[in-house]
Each structure stands twice: as C-alpha cells, then as structure tokens.
Length: 269
Length: 345
Image (tube, rainbow over all chains, first blue to last red; front, side):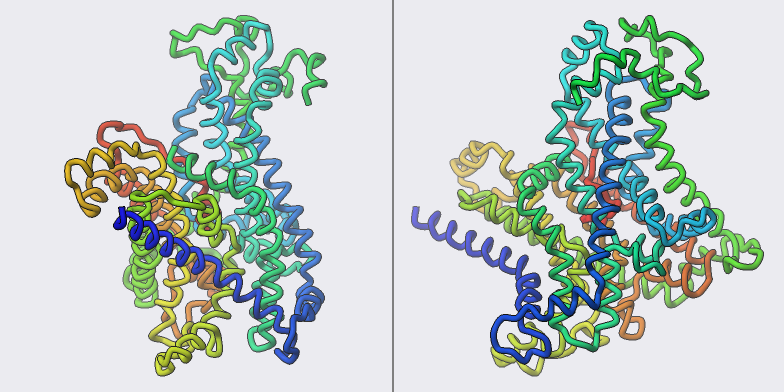
C-alpha cells in the first residue's frame, strides 16, 4: 500500500512537471509583455499592448482571420456533409477511389501544391485577395471533413434512414431533417479542428497574400511584425504574440473537452 | 431549419441535375433499392460528392500534377522551360545543400517524433498503474501547445532562448553560467534548440493520445498480471504497449509528418541559419520556388518530400497494424495544417 502511494505521488509530480513545461513558454511571454515598454516601469503595464496593436495593425488582421476562418469552416462543413452523407449511405460510382484519394490527401504535405497554386491564382488575378486564402484552404480541409462526416453518417443507425425512406422522405430531406439534427456534436468538433487549422495557417498566407496588408491574417501579421521588430522592444513583440494567441485560447477553454475527446477518438477510428 | 422543409418535396433531384450521368430516370423506383445488384450505382449521388471533390481536384490534385510536370524541366517561371529529364531529382540527392537539409530533417525526426513518443509512453505507463486525479485538467494543459499558431510558438521560444532570456537566467542562477549561449544563434545549438521546440509542441499530443488509449484498457488485465507476479516493466511491455498500438501508430504518423514538413517553425525562428545549420527541405522548396526562381528543382524536392512522407506513413501503418483486425483505417484530424496539418497541426 505504501509503495502504491509513493508511486502515485511520483507519477502525479511528473504530470505536474509536464504540465508546467507545457504552459511555461506562454506564461513567459505573458510576463514579458506586461513588463512595460523599455522594461522601465516596475509594475504591470499594458503599454506594450497598445503599441503592438497600433504598430502591427492587428485589428484588421484579426478581422481577416475571422472572416477567412469562418468562411472556410462553413463552406467545408456544408460540402463535407453532402459528400460524407453520400459516401456513407449511397452507392457512389468510384466511391472507393474517392475515399482512397481523400485518405492520401490527409497526410499530403501541401508544400507540393503551393507553387502551382500560386501560378493558378495569379492567372485568375486572385493573389492578394481573400479568395486566395479561402478556396485552397477549403480544398485542403475537404479530406478531413469528408472522412470525418462519412464516419459519423456511417454510425447513424440504418433503421433511422430506412424509416425515413419508408415515410417517403427524399435523400436530401433525410439528410436535412433526420441525420443533421443528430450530427451536432460531430459537426462541432470538426468545425473546431478546421477553425484551429485555418486560423493558424501560415505558409499559404505567406505565399498567396504576400503584398496586401489589408487581407493578411494574424499569423502572417505577427511574423512580419516580429521579424521587423527583432531588434526592438521584446515586450511589444511578446504582447503581439499574446494578442494573436488570445482568441484561440478563449475558444479552447470552452471547447477543449469536446475537441480533445473528439480528436483522440476520431484519430484512432 | 426544420420548418422550411415540407414544401421542397423533390429533394435530391432539385439542384439542376447537370450532365453528370444522371440520365437514367430511376428516381421513382428509388424507394426500395435493390441492395443485391452491384451495378445499381446511384449516379445522382455524384451530385452530393461533386462540390467537395471539385475543390479537392482543382486546388490539390491539379497542382500536384503540375508539380510533377515542372519537376522534369529546368524552368525559371519567366522564360520557356527546357526538359531536364531526371536532372532535378539527381540534384536533390547530390546537391550538398539539399543533402545537408535532408540530414537536418533526420535529426529533427528524433526530436519531433522519437522523443515525444517515448516520453509519452513512459508517462502513460506510469499512469496506467495508478488512479490519476484531475485527468481532464492535465489533458487540457498538455494539449495546449498543439492549438497555438506556430508563429506564436516561435516568438515565445525565441524569447525563452534569447541571450538574456529565462533559460540563460536559470542557468546562471544555478551556477551553470558558462553554458549560456544564444541558443538559436549559435551554430552548435541552433538545430537541437529547434528540435526541443518541436518536442515541446508534440509531447503533449502524444501523452493525450496514449492516455485515451489507457482509459480503454480493462483494469482486470492489470490485476491478473499482478496476481501472476508481473512487475511494472513486464506489465508495461505485456499489456500497456500492445494495447496502445493504434495510438502509437497515429502519434508516429502525426509527429513524423510534422517533422518532415516543418516550414513555419524554422521560418519564424532561424530561417535556416545561422549559416545553413538549420535548413530543411521545405525551406528550400519555398526559397527555390519563390526567391531563387528554380521552379523545376523546387518541384522535384517537393515531390521527393511527399513520397518520403507517404512511404513513412504506409510503413508505420503496416508495422503497427493489428494482426487480428486486418482492416484498420486511420482518420486523422488533418495533416492539412498538419500543422500537423496540422497540429495540426
């Protein structure tokens, strides 16, 4: 019994240590952001935040990020629900090939797509617009979205679909009235994951909206800002990083339970 | 949403039904479909799949095709390209810069994948033996690095590892002042420092994955093992490790793809420097394509990177496949941001 107790204490200590390591970098930038500009004032100071906010133009960047992320999530969820529903409940010609392609799409490094993507969108005169951020990211979200929704729809009891069919409900109506109402949790988790990915996306933004500050998303704005400010005040850079992390952190606090359980179960499925 | 329904009675035939093979008017018979005949494909179902597939084809598959095509040309994006045969591919393996970058990737593979998975397994093994209090809180905190933008991570760690940053302060405080250095700016320490950042991003993900697996293990298995006199080590190898096979497979796939891609973190910490001490393939994909105008070679490198990732993923899948359940799918939260995807990033 004594041994078990010691073991429990040691393991919990290790867990606490691992957790402290996980939050430490974030706490440390929070601390240095509050040191005040120039590190002069001894007490807490929010001056670095107002400096970062005005110099880094994070207001417009946050709006851009929100617009792009919400659009990508909504469009992807709609497309993925339709496709996932068909792949789970209908005999789709070439369905196996489609599923195979989507599985490969899950692990694809999209570095391989960026150069032709840039040329394609240049040809369409869409570089440096919101479209250049939204459309490719919908496409990159499609594999996860479709496979996710397909595995959810496949878990819907066949009797439910059968009953709807006998009642004379069309397939699209079945999706809308019977299946989607019970898909809430699956869609919430998927939306959260896609939102995180889109919000944090960096390379695509760097390549596809390089010269138009008004559509640049927060990660890109932060990257330019911290690159330019490398030699300047670390408190301001830290404040900028906190500003960028904050919306995601807030969302995470509310959605973490669903997100993590959804991810760990979904991943293994 | 539910109120607007009854009027639109025709449902799936509604959206315009263009020429996508919907010619057979078998809708009236649809009510009792014959499940037996394999040829009874539902062609109209393609209408549901088409929008998603269109995005995927235009913005993912088509660009990949173009990349493959470019990779066989010497092309600067402005003048006419000239066929180069396999020249770009041999360059990937013979150019000393690129070879060095591949080598750096291998080093990072240890930090990004091996280290987090082993740490995660050790802790998971310890946790399997006790009742863990505050599990959900630990889980949420450990997962935190995964949700942050890599740019935020880069800024935070640049701050930590700076010449006058907290890490060096701690070293000085405990009397190890002679080890202080500019961690990301020193030729000898830059690559391991980046590796440490990657390990930090990934270890929580691994632990959370393994924890979820451990919760699923039947407690009585452990009790039986203990009655048979199995020690902690035996217990770990006989019960915990095999039960976590699926989770280990996912963890390896996620961490390895993250390690091999890995553009954001390096771009926002060292940009490959100092010198070329932290260059990786994805950095050259970007620089060759958008700065050095070596489009053919950038494409070849990107294709090689893709193939390596696909091979590794398949290898991990095969190696850790469950023998008794041969068909095991993995559905991933998207290596599309792969951050991991993202963590995915």
